[in-house]
Length: 400
Image (cartoon, rainbow, N blue to C red):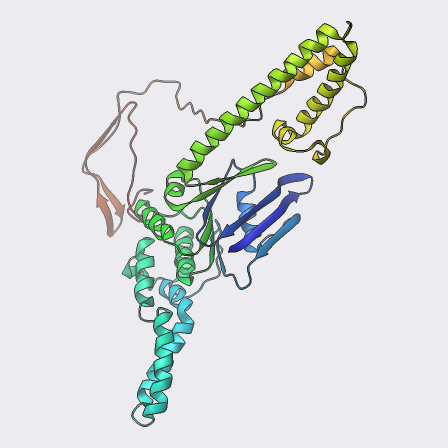
């Protein structure tokens, strides 16, 4: 059963189209990643699914009673009290049932039969909803996301942006929604917390739609990929590694089809050039009219649409008069492959002057603040061309 369905969804800001024509659905058990270059509308789409933003056109249909939990990138969450309060309040209904159970226990001595019957039904419901395990769940989730017992009493008002985001994520997971919408959930997590979240989501009974630039996280956490392009989208099944394989396979097939179809156009053009002034002039003119229509259609909607749609379904404008032979030659040669190639990032990190062989050396280094030692660092040497990574849990002192 689909928890949420999207049909012909489009979003524009003024004259700028962010995306258009999106159609897909998310069912229970699906863990879908939204991927694509910056600016294609991944965060915008999440906001629309969450009901925070509105689409310019199209529909978003949510199943009746579906509960959605949304984690944004910004730490502008409305929470108050302590870290423990924020998580504990998720279970207010259970806590009320627990208090009612305690009241019934005190009444058992005087109203045994009636009270025992009510107590039994309430206790069964309390246990079914996790009443005897919710405290343990809170501790497990907080520990998994990098908090320890000393953090439970911290005021949310005094937490950093990253800590507030982790606190809100903990609350979301504990609230057990039907659909999780997570925008860059690993941004403020250390390695251990990311690995914990991977495991948590892999066993998640509900559904999730995730935006993340962490391909290793998507590999472990997702079983479907929706790739957004400017003006297009494609759905893939499997994790991120499977998506890369399928994407390349689809690209190879598209390239083969494009090369084959362009070769046919080139052959038609050769026939036209040989016969446009010969005995088969009528056939040559007919081929030129057809070639003109096809090339104009490819230029407007792409090779894929031309090959996979009936001509009557194509929204294209074609000229009534055919190209000249010279124009046809130029337009056929100018046709470009529909296969999208992702740009590669090239960084040149250099300096005008060559550094010495020894770039950095530490000895007996201690890191911390007055009255609070974070750690004592081992002696370290960094030489020219070395590249070292600083890793460790949140709060260990990496930035310091």
